[in-house]
Image 1 (cartoon, rainbow, N blue to C red):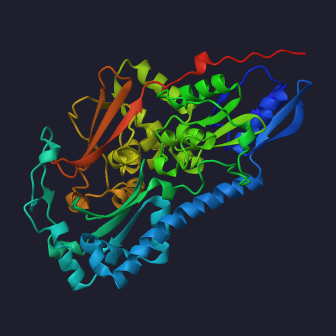
Image 2 (image 1 turned 90 degrees about the horizontal axis):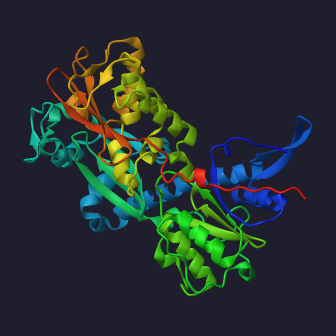
Image 3 (image 1 turned 180 degrees about the vertical axis):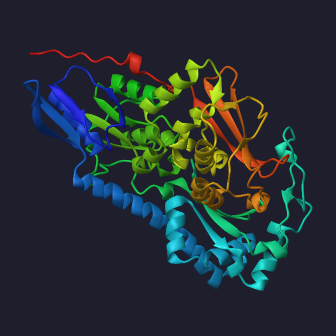
Amino acid sequence: MALTVLRPLSDDKAIIFSKDRPLRETLSDLAALFGASWRETRPVLGKPAYRLELPTKTRRLEERLEREDKRWILEKLDAMVKQLRTDPEKLQAKRLAVELYAQLTPGQKERLAETQHVKLPIAGLTAKQKLDLAPLFYKGDQFADNPQFRPGDDPTKMKATAIRPDKMERVAVAFDLFVFNDGIRARMAAPTGMEIPMHQFPAPEAFALPPHGNPYDGAKVDEKALLTESKVPTEKAFVDRLKALAERSGQPVFADLYRSQPVHVGSKSEIKDPQSALGKLDALCQPEGYLWWTANKTLLFRKRDWYRQRRYEVSDAWREAMERQLKQRGGKFIVADLLPLAELSLEQLTGLYDDDNPMRAQRRVWAMPEALRMITAGVSPQESITQFREHPLLVNLAAPQMQPLWNAFLERYLHQTVILDADPTQFGFLCGARQVENKPVVVLDIYLQPKAGNMAVGGQIQIPLEIPDDRRSKTQITMTLR
């Protein structure tokens, strides 16, 4: 029998703990986990063939959940705008940020929800608003008119480059959304690097789905099918907790699996009765942000925001190819090694980080997809990347193919003040690659060189040299024909 899987399911991964049972039941539970269905296709070499497909109903559900995701965050921000009109004193330090957010058009707000980033040009603000922005642009000891920062200097001691009133018209303030374990954080940031935190929205509110129940049709769980164990498995890894659950309960256990760190996790406040069977399974799922339900006697577990978590995933095939590529040269790093990285999105670069705080990882890779595309388009693939950023990788900003890439980088890069007067002939990136001691990870540091002899804030990318918690070699599948 031949089994195939169509996109977007083909890169999805599953955990299955199941004892001797008919293959038909196992395949049925696997389809139920992903809201999918098996379809019989043309026989292969005379044998029956089936294909796992995502039906229209499930696709529409995922699209609706993604829309609700975006609508939810915009409703929260718009509620702050309403508060600005009814009770502005409560906003305190956030007041200016909320006032400027209120000036975004509906299209700009939609773009913020979609890309987590949008800009508002200073040129369109009132004279009073520009004056109110002074502490973020030039007023204070944290600023200098021309701070000197060269390779080898400590980035933490770098002063912000002041943008005086005569240059403010050339730049914009940015509104950003950072996704992290406990929720979503909104901020307004100036191109000097200064920012105003707007609000932090807790994770339970970020979940469109409850901690238990069938996510595809809303059916409640069958409490008769639940375990009666007195203790919740407490193993550190989610996979190990599921294994312990399957062994103790004797029930088949199915779950989807992600290599990236959880975007959102659940909250203990959602567990209404910790001693009940429902509460115990809710508690098992909470640390990783999963939900659960039952299909006959099978326990099914899925990320409560799988449609969001999926955006942070990089396929195992990509990871394995990158690992082979880096190991072939014995630790040496060249620009060609950046090509696979340049294909990834901001979320995927975030997902490569072995960091339990996605927001921290997201800050490090901010504008790095655009930087990687500039480097790989403008620098020879064989150019070496050393450990200590010894020489800049120059990109010709005047080249026709570089202009759209440069504009995309400018749109995302926060510290625009340092590149307002960049030298087109000397602009480049200072890159350094180093392997972390006692850890299978290469760290790629990327700084900017706006002009010869100057260095500006960039970012950092983490490249794993092995698949995290890879248990494929321990997988055991036994099939018996009867």
